[in-house]
Length: 378
Ligand SMILES: Cc1cc2nc3c(=O)[nH]c(=O)nc-3n(C[C@H](O)[C@H](O)[C@H](O)COP(=O)(O)OP(=O)(O)OC[C@H]3O[C@@H](n4cnc5c(N)ncnc54)[C@H](O)[C@@H]3O)c2cc1C
Picture 1 (cartoon, rainbow, N blue to C red):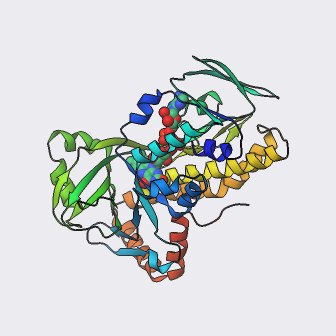
Picture 2 (spheres, helix red, strand yellow):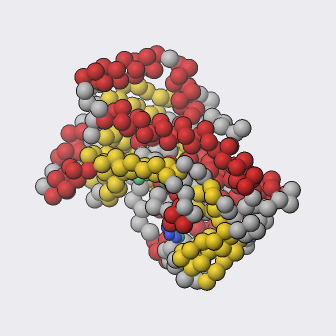
Picture 3 (cartoon, protein in one colour):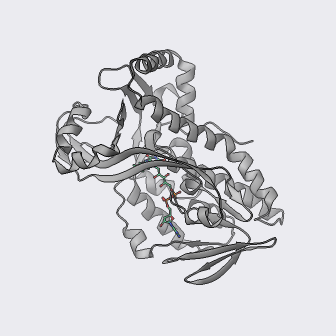
């Protein structure tokens, strides 16, 4: 939808096809919130939807990272940079609603729902999708169909896959003390626990992403142990918990494509790289894919070039290579690094965090990177 809006702003016609019905998509219950980086908000502003989203977005001004409950702590503060909040927490359902409204208003975007892809065929001149709704031709096909992408399969684009054997419990909590726009991330050997501040004028609320080893999932859910175990890890960061919502569970794995396009099909977002949520960066990375692909396509259209040509998609690939690889590698290795509970690794992490915390340069650079303000255009 992001790419479609970028292109439609330049009067380029786009057809979006989705396997779900419009009704299901707009009602879809996504209990997650997304940490949207400062860089992504600038993109959303350009496509004309940030002002609406901002009304329901909670700014993040501080991020506190620690290893376990007694380990070393690092604090990141937005005041140390001059770029506004470090990011914003937005309710996914609300985010999708705003996108849908904008898509529905655009005369350059068609939306076909209940769509089932049967096959794709690609040749020198164009690409075709065969589906339950008939055959469609285009210069370019963009696979933006998420982690378990069918387009990836049909285009025969190979990917690296790893199952983290972890699950993320996603839920929200109402707590005693205000969060003061702080996000907390505590690394445990079983996985990270993230508390993300939510905008709630009446109560103190945070959204939680609690990662644990997959084998503990049933034990936690069956024995009614969930709240007790969570409270142990939460360690009263924002005071007593008054209410805890029912968790939604996500299996955690990584898909990372070796190629970003084949013939006239290019993959963006989770279809191309679906990463661990440890750093809350997947959606931001997908936004940047859409932005860069949009730029390359608009330039090419203005020059009257074939939008599905090898040279254009190659240009896009080169522009996205560093940013994507950095985040895929960083999230994968970060999760591995903190999941290791050996004495030596604990010492290594502790020393690393102390050195990191002493270096204002490293802290500034990593904040700018996480905020999506480090430019990787080439
Ligand atoms: C627990 C958790 C927390 C996260 N938190 C954050 C965060 O704080 N910040 C952040 O940046 N990222 C976060 N992420 C990652 C983020 O959710 C994803 O990166 C993002 O949703 C990917 O968007 P997408 O549009 O590429 O794919 P999706 O959101 O998966 O959308 C895919 C679309 O394709 C459609 N589709 C699927 N299959 C087909 C098909 N066969 N035919 C047609 N249509 C199809 C679907 O209906 C859907 O509309 C988190 C992820 C998890 C699991």
